Length: 459
Image (cartoon, rainbow, N blue to C red; front, side, top):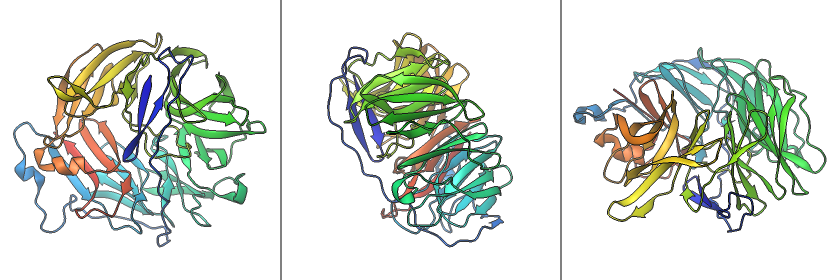
């Protein structure tokens, strides 16, 4: 099997045998290097209102003036602000009811679906890591603390009110030199798992205190966490062994799955049901596994020789286990996008493949011509997917039924914003309550044309 995982602006290939993952063969991988963390902006936490311009500067035209019949409405288009350096990571995006929240350096801003600012919160320094999941409208973020590139200060943010509820240093690092670099975070219930280069911790959302969960044995370390319905963690050891564990709500270990020797977890696509990808020490694929709620192997996905391309960001160290876009899961099905391939008579095409989590076998495939087709999320038994824009046509949001079949268009994005939609270097894509949002994960600061921070579309 061949699995392609997009890494920032490029992809890396992890290749194994086509025998169900039992006897993987090898092919080397390449990666796109990550960029440094943000620099310290001006400190001083404040709250207040932002602009209400709907995201257009003085003299800019409204793309809705060029809206064609059947196209979605542009709710707003927010330009990227000036930032302290180029190639700046800007983690932190959450879609709430009627508004979204985006972090950029030391500012966290909520935007109404009409485009105006709902609230703005300032932190002393730049946000450098954040989970994708929230708990009751609250999320723990990490921002820069003392020391160069130290992502070591934590704050609980109420995303409903735009206020900071507590602010604490991260638990003491056990890394050599005490650094907090390449931090990955995942949140579930009252727990937040943190992993960084050389260290890890679990803290409570409610008060920020560290939870005394089981520590790995000597020669082993936590590789990362994935959140959502439950909190999973993956760890590996220098002797070639590795495990996946689910943490109970109080922080104890609920179950442990032992990965076959020589492999470890590279990505956790879903925490519940658990779906994980494996790699060996040379970053060659060991397949994709589905695990049961009790931590037993449910199936190995029959990927065959097909190449797949979920978008998993740039994470050379591997601490951000749950950062993949372009995958979706229901109780019994896992959805993966293929890479673009040449199809005789159709030009370039991509597909979404649906896999039965109990048997591991492929159930169906849906094809799109001339564009990458990415799963987004589930809507009941239906799959919501994003047909990314081509060089000539804008994207679409489609719904695919539980048995596959022809996708039904929910939103046809405007031709007027096709270039802006395509020009995001790296972005988070979210569909909720009939609206579609694109939020940048990185401000490059190098383009001659203006970059966008956020775009929102609706009916």
